[in-house]
Length: 237
Image (cartoon, rainbow, N blue to C red; front, side, top):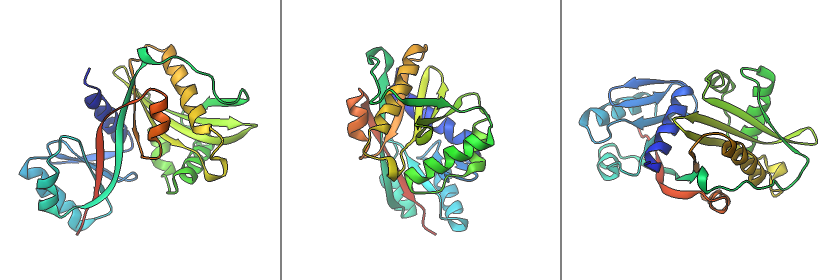
């Protein structure tokens, strides 16, 4: 199993579930999270379409995979360096179930297309990340059978979020978020442990995610291994 390939495939399928269209060698989100990812990043046709999009809307972020020819694209489009994430994977055969930090934590898988729960998810997740997540996009994505949304509760208060995308034996873990008010209490770790315990019970082979620098120690402690880096670049007009 090529862990990096499975990680990228799971991520891009989630971005497709968020809503997208194809333009030449590109796939482009129609709304949030406003990502552009390259199907064939070395072709002239792909770079031409990127340049065309940047003339009309420079708010997108272009995802460049570890094998992308970054130098060529940066030279051609004068892309600005954006953020960076780390592809990480965990083979479930190597994971041993653990106990969360507190016995009174409750992990709830949200009912499909339930507006009230999804609005709560969006509020908690947006507060944790510090940017606005589109309720409409999340509501639409929740209709996909591969997508599940989770809220972690303590004393009936939602303290953390997570989203999973399951396909082809891989469970991608996304939107792990804890608002500032609840940080430093181990909720992110407890959320991950409870999710991984559930994944362990299934027949899924691998868990994948993309970690920020802040999240790397947590995920490494849980057994995740880094497979490569994902870089985002901001388009210029």
